[in-house]
Image (cartoon, rainbow, N blue to C red; front, top):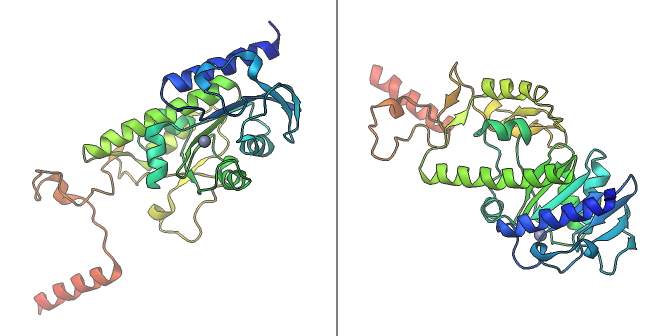
Length: 295
Ligand SMILES: [Zn+2]
């Protein structure tokens, strides 16, 4: 089997898995892979990814000119071309609409909290690229902001996009994003999403080399935690992860629910000792009250 026929068969298999797992409905989604340095093999437009055959694929150059194939290439070709342009290390790109991850993309909630060790070592953070009309040149422009530093991202009100050094690594990142979204959703429904502390995140980041993971960018502190919102990390060069300082502990309570007792919890119990956040006005009022009571 030649390399090209193997890659055609691999795209068919990845499309079948995406459809079987419900990551796409109808003709949604698209897949591409590098075929040498200057050509791409890409899914055609308007076909269900669950029922493709190897002969359906299109061969294009890196400018999107069709070189071979009976069908037209994917309507999201421009987004794929942008990924290859920005990331010479990318050998494959997958795009689908996995429903839980896409729900986060619709809600405007990035998957950027330090929750799962394997997600931190592989993807780091999963930001949301701003909304853009699908299949237009707006979408590559939205993706450009994040793609240099991230191997996976959500697309606002649309879906998810991943890339990898081969087709299956790109596809598995799509699985990881949807799995992470499911776990995060369940934890949030249960009312508590304890986060991995910053020190532990740094330790996990140090393990990337041990696992042979070539991350495109380092994990950087969350600007809302370090208090430097104006000069926050650049998404072009950083994977921004929400991870609070741990005070020696490796897991810390979710800052969103910290300070509020757990449902049915004792306000004087452990939850009552948690950090709360106040505005300067509220803090000043509290101090003034305390001074008055001393007089
Ligand atoms: Zn799409």
